[in-house]
View 1: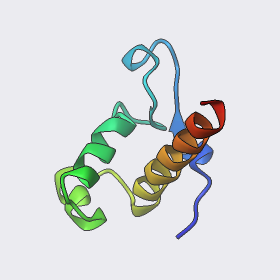
View 2: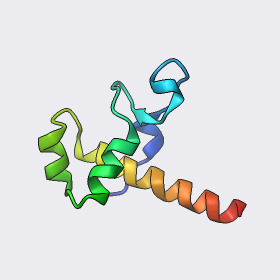
View 3: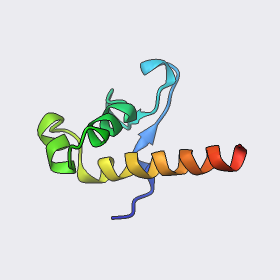
View 4: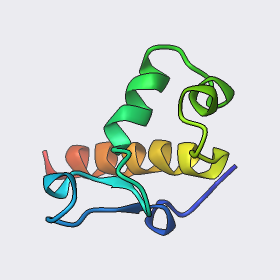
Length: 75
Protein backbone atom coordinates (compact mmCIF):
# COMPACT_ATOMS: atom_id res chain seq x y z
CA UNK A 1 0.00 0.00 0.00
CA UNK A 2 1.84 3.11 -1.18
CA UNK A 3 1.61 6.12 1.13
CA UNK A 4 3.23 9.52 1.16
CA UNK A 5 5.40 9.33 4.27
CA UNK A 6 5.46 13.12 4.67
CA UNK A 7 1.79 12.96 5.65
CA UNK A 8 2.63 10.73 8.63
CA UNK A 9 6.16 11.59 9.76
CA UNK A 10 7.49 14.82 11.24
CA UNK A 11 10.66 16.05 12.86
CA UNK A 12 10.64 19.01 15.21
CA UNK A 13 13.51 20.06 17.48
CA UNK A 14 11.32 20.38 20.58
CA UNK A 15 10.04 16.78 20.47
CA UNK A 16 12.43 13.80 20.80
CA UNK A 17 15.33 16.16 20.03
CA UNK A 18 14.27 16.30 16.39
CA UNK A 19 14.23 12.57 15.74
CA UNK A 20 11.68 11.61 13.06
CA UNK A 21 8.44 10.51 14.69
CA UNK A 22 4.89 9.64 13.79
CA UNK A 23 2.86 12.83 13.49
CA UNK A 24 0.78 13.56 16.57
CA UNK A 25 2.74 11.09 18.72
CA UNK A 26 6.05 10.69 20.50
CA UNK A 27 6.64 7.35 18.73
CA UNK A 28 9.96 7.51 16.85
CA UNK A 29 10.18 6.05 13.38
CA UNK A 30 13.21 4.08 14.57
CA UNK A 31 11.01 2.18 17.05
CA UNK A 32 8.62 1.04 14.31
CA UNK A 33 11.53 0.11 12.03
CA UNK A 34 13.13 -1.79 14.91
CA UNK A 35 9.99 -3.88 15.31
CA UNK A 36 9.99 -4.60 11.58
CA UNK A 37 13.67 -5.56 11.68
CA UNK A 38 12.92 -7.91 14.58
CA UNK A 39 10.40 -9.76 12.41
CA UNK A 40 7.13 -8.19 13.54
CA UNK A 41 4.46 -7.81 10.89
CA UNK A 42 2.24 -4.70 10.87
CA UNK A 43 -0.40 -6.50 12.96
CA UNK A 44 2.22 -7.43 15.56
CA UNK A 45 3.40 -3.84 15.71
CA UNK A 46 -0.18 -2.70 16.24
CA UNK A 47 -0.52 -5.16 19.12
CA UNK A 48 2.54 -3.58 20.75
CA UNK A 49 1.64 -0.01 19.73
CA UNK A 50 -2.18 0.07 19.44
CA UNK A 51 -2.29 3.71 18.34
CA UNK A 52 -0.18 3.06 15.23
CA UNK A 53 -2.14 2.61 12.00
CA UNK A 54 -1.17 0.37 9.08
CA UNK A 55 -0.60 3.54 7.05
CA UNK A 56 1.87 4.81 9.64
CA UNK A 57 3.81 1.53 9.48
CA UNK A 58 3.91 1.78 5.68
CA UNK A 59 5.02 5.42 5.97
CA UNK A 60 7.97 4.34 8.15
CA UNK A 61 9.06 1.89 5.47
CA UNK A 62 8.70 4.49 2.73
CA UNK A 63 10.69 6.95 4.84
CA UNK A 64 13.49 4.40 5.30
CA UNK A 65 13.50 3.64 1.57
CA UNK A 66 13.76 7.32 0.65
CA UNK A 67 16.54 7.84 3.20
CA UNK A 68 18.47 4.85 1.82
CA UNK A 69 18.06 6.12 -1.75
CA UNK A 70 19.29 9.57 -0.68
CA UNK A 71 22.33 8.04 1.04
CA UNK A 72 23.16 6.05 -2.12
CA UNK A 73 22.83 9.11 -4.33
CA UNK A 74 24.92 11.26 -1.98
CA UNK A 75 27.63 8.62 -1.57
